Image 1: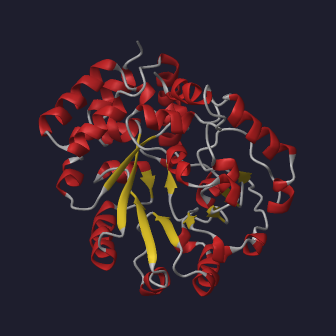
Image 2: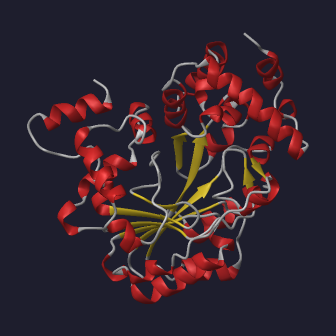
Image 3: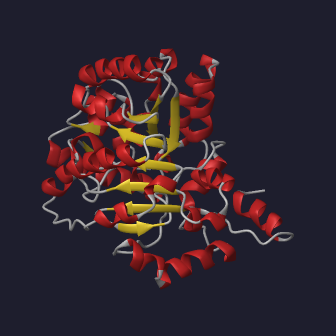
Length: 360
């Protein structure tokens, strides 16, 4: 039985929304607006918190959660669960809806020092500059009007939090109000300054998610302006400073998992926890573009490793079937970015030479 089918079975005996996010979580994005969560694939509300709370947008979202009309808007969590990984939707189950918003996902702007292939202008100021896109930034100062001392969990993302002045100012204020809150900070691991680390260490229950998408040339190709030699050294520094209060966050996509056998040994051997997530959007970069013959090659390699990280990767790779239209979009988009960034996907692995010339 699929994810929605399981929920409908529960609904037959108990009135329960598909997801509690609209009641217990607030996703506040400085360039996009407000949504129930970051995985939301529906429209965002472009405005402040008070306006959102009284909006028809929120009313419609809550109704959708009871109607089960969530195939598109909640596709990311559905895909994650079908790959055997715990989703954000499932994590919201432990919270009581009657207690209101207890979780905050805050991304004040798109200030960033990288240009990741799967990212966009709304989340990277450098991509906005590269593509000549004017991105309006909301005034999110009203986030400070929330009862920050009563929130039980806060996620901080970007852009890149370590270079975002608004983000750092918020963390400073928060450390004086609720320093023992459970706080998750997602960073690209490019910053290991003493000032940044001292700010993070003001929180008693901090957990870091370091975003990496491969090793060596694979990482550098996907996360433009990233340099693996520096990143690998920084990962050691983060581990030394924060120990088990951190993990690696990896998005499984065409650019890395199609050649996972060329770089994954680094992460198999690493003692740092690895969290693998299926990239569902942009769809053109997703593993729906990976043809069966290439899936077989990488899955056979992974299977021989007899390792739990490899087993998770296999499950992720096989979550979705091959889609010819997605494959065509992958080739088109890859050629576009290679042209404007003066790169060549064939340089990171010879397999991509076969993939890119394959027109069937």
